[in-house]
Picture: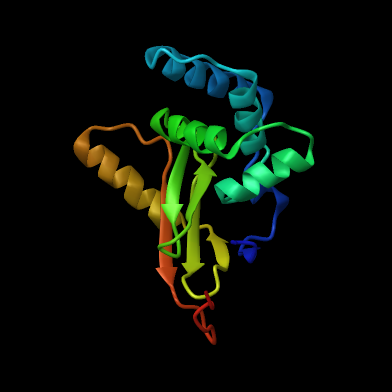
Length: 167
C-alpha cells in the first residue's frame, strides 16, 4: 500500500482540491460516457465517483473499497473494478503501476498539475513543483498547435538508503 506520502511544497495551496464547479462537470462527463456505453449511472457508481473525488492521493482499488465500506457504502469488489475501468475510459482517473503488481489510481480531471517522484522500493511519493516542466509542456503544445490544459509527470527511482520492499 502506498501510504508514505510527502510533499515538497510548504503551502496548503498546493494540495489539489475539487470544488462544486468541478464536481458537476465530472458527473456530467461520467454520465455521458456511461450513456455512450448504454450503461446507467447507478447509485453505486455515483458513490464510487464521490469517494474518488474525496481522495487527495493515489489509491488502490481495495483501499477505496475498504474506505467506502467503513463509511457504510455497500459496494462489491467487482463493481469497484468495473467502475474504475469506466472512469479511466472517461478520462476522469488514470491508472499508474508503481510496483509492477498492484495497480494504483489517481483522479486527473479537474486537478492541478501534479509532478511526483516515487521510490520503487518503499512506495514513498514526493510531490514536486517544477516550473520548468510546465514551460516544457507549453513549448511542446505550441510546437504542435495545441492548447495546454495540464499534465502529470512521474519519476520512478530509488530513494537514498531504501531497500526493496518485502513481498
